[in-house]
Image (cartoon, rainbow, N blue to C red; front, top):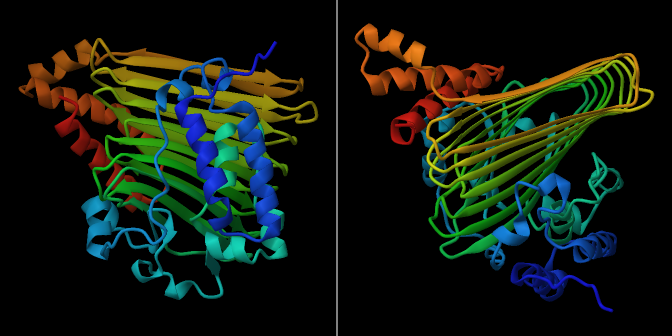
Length: 445
């Protein structure tokens, strides 16, 4: 009896996309073998669905009705002014090194990396795939492999663009490195990008990833960032997602931390019809810290899934996960956070917390905290809350002459601001606070 599950139209679409486009994708024989193996894993599992525990709230087999063709190889014509307009005045004004990726293609003429020579090596992913160095071979797919995840497998099979960054040992990069991913296709399209980042021993860097749209066309985005931080590195890793309402944003961070690393991650999401942000962090060296925080602001029928997995694989490391969500309309917000403490990871310290503020009766918040502990000398905990605007505080503000709408905005801004305050970089933090208030003015009422 044949028990094979019938593929959906979208699943068949990815099979066709790979089989017809494989030979045109960048890469030598080593890369092609990597692609083929990854696609075999996807073919065996298909798109994740609700019976896959990690995807119980985000059934991609049901949500994705079809696949879009890859965005044009050269990308749409776009100017730097248009890139900055997509970022908005607040983010565009931040003094940074900028790397612009349009429709999955690195665009050096829109980028500004001239002063990085000797500190940061910059290479388009397509070039690295076409002529992979031994260092690149030892990095690609090795940061924190997620072989069982179909989204990662699809990304490995179809990756065509993105950037490769190598921060030299002991380099202190004074300005943030800002990778700006722009969707500009005039018709429905998909982009599959991979950023590969290595941070040398003792180096300090702030890395920003922005995902924005210069088009109203439907977009399917599958983006992966691999990051390896060597011993003693300090990394601030920040993401901003404000893509158009026709976007499916599927993103994964795979991170490996050496010894005595400080890793601070923050994700701020306001756009896309539905988004899944996966963050996988693995401690590979002792005495490291990982603080992962996030802010989600969603309205209408937006769906936003944040899934975090932190592996305490070695002793004496500290992890913190802190997320806040503001949900209006019929929006659905999900936070799944799992902390694994391995058998030999004594002295581990892990805590997770998620809070949601509901702006309507029809919004939904789903929280799934998990601790899996195999060591006995640990300090771990988790918590989750949800609720509406505090009526007592609202009354207090209104009693002092503040109009109802403004009073609500003040309380919501203070709520989401607690998460945004986790951002260390002052300019970025202020930009995000301004964006949050703009969202409240347009959506939060």
